[in-house]
Image 1: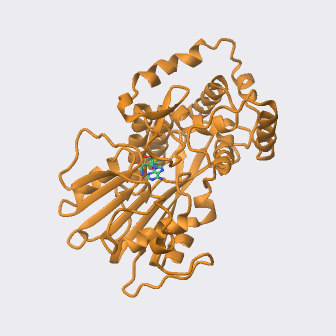
Image 2: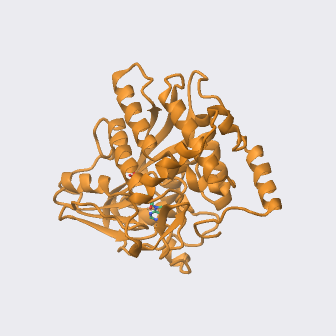
Image 3: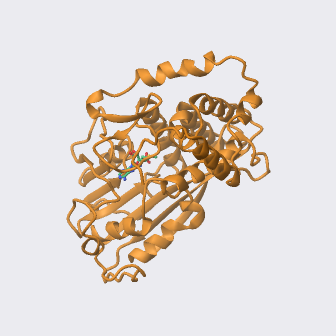
Length: 375
Ligand SMILES: C[S@@+](CC[C@H](N)C(=O)[O-])C[C@H]1O[C@@H](n2cnc3c(N)ncnc32)[C@H](O)[C@@H]1O
């Protein structure tokens, strides 16, 4: 697999192949979106670029760039599909609020005990906002948060440390160490969910809890208002097809991957909760309306930063991406689309007598010893 960023596809044959496979996946051609808006002048499309380029972090971090937006640093060959600049960070922070609203103000659902939870790990922490809140709530615990991108919060609680680590490679932590491992919103970032949860299992103490909170990429509606050919209805298709091209899974929630991978790793007492996260202020119920309003705000903050890389893998131009983004925003603002996306929280415990069902491809229960060539 190529590391990020992919250059735009330029050869005619490659572009044709791209168009064919996108059409097979039910993705409308990029030109469709200009006719939806009746765009006559490009100027308004590019005005927003000034904002996104203004906020780049210092070049010392050597971020990769696609069309002026920055991605994770060149120091890792990990692949990640969203930008890592300020617009994206603000979106992640608003989304954190959405996720906690969905859990009725809680940061986790596992039955944690403040007296016994002494070590916690947050994988793929993003802006670190969840880890900061958790460290504040669990003052006696030592909390570690990892990501492939440097995290630069203005305030860090004394019991929290940030580390750069690729979760798809061997973890630099002791075995049997953590009382709680939290993994949220890593769709499209994990090369092998079985292996990820096996690692979590190995690095966790007996009795510790793993919690996985994932989102679907598909935008749906119960009343048919989000059609397959609406901009919102196309969103998930673009991610799933783009992810297929760079070898990352965006169907974790639909496929039930979290529970299966937890069972295979050897976790027990597994529980799960399904969530429907509204997008937009269309719901009549007050709580759902609040969630939907914040979800819309989070997406509006950086629709481009989420979709740009995926659209690039489909061969779209910057102009086509911006026009599609306008269509997504128009639909979110209109209360006609009763849109939501599914989420799933799954949590499980490492038992006293760990037994890991053998994977067909493995010969030993120790993930790291059998995969010694990963680093
Ligand atoms: C959608 S964000 C979610 C951030 C955070 N977990 C949250 O819920 O707010 C995904 C994060 O995973 C990080 N990430 C992607 N690939 C990763 C990898 N291989 N190892 C560690 N972190 C990764 C990204 O840099 C990004 O910060």
